[in-house]
Amino acid sequence: MVVSLASANAAVVALPASLSVRPGATTASFGLNALAVSADTPVAVSGSFQGTTASGTVTVLSGLDTVVVTKAEYVPGKNQLKVEATSTNSAATLQVFNATPGSVRINGLPPVVGTMSNAGGGKFVGQFVAGGPFNSVAVQSSQGGLKTAPVAQK
Image (cartoon, rainbow, N blue to C red; front, side, top):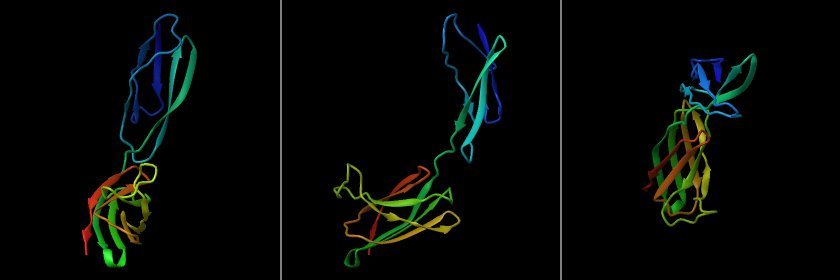
């Protein structure tokens, strides 16, 4: 039997026009092509056979943002860490982690140093008082981007 497939937004989710399903089968798999989107985008999809239609929604997720650490400095005498970074998603929230090898881990993860302030235009800054050592930091975005960078000792 042949099931006809349709997408409510073929520019975002492209489906094959039809799908062959073996007799007696209750499920079938098919591939789809999804266009990159800047925001999560729900698209209604449907399959029809002999006048009966079943539908559902496929949500195409926006891609991960790109994080770049532009500055990472630590002043050991003041326990002061300064981090500056950018993200391709200006609405993201960025957190700083101590990624120094051998640093204390909490449930296997590096400890969170703090959350950076959004300076606008995709730029983020953070100044934290934290005991070191800091040889490396990781900056993680709420949108999934992650960047590790060396820390300059001042």
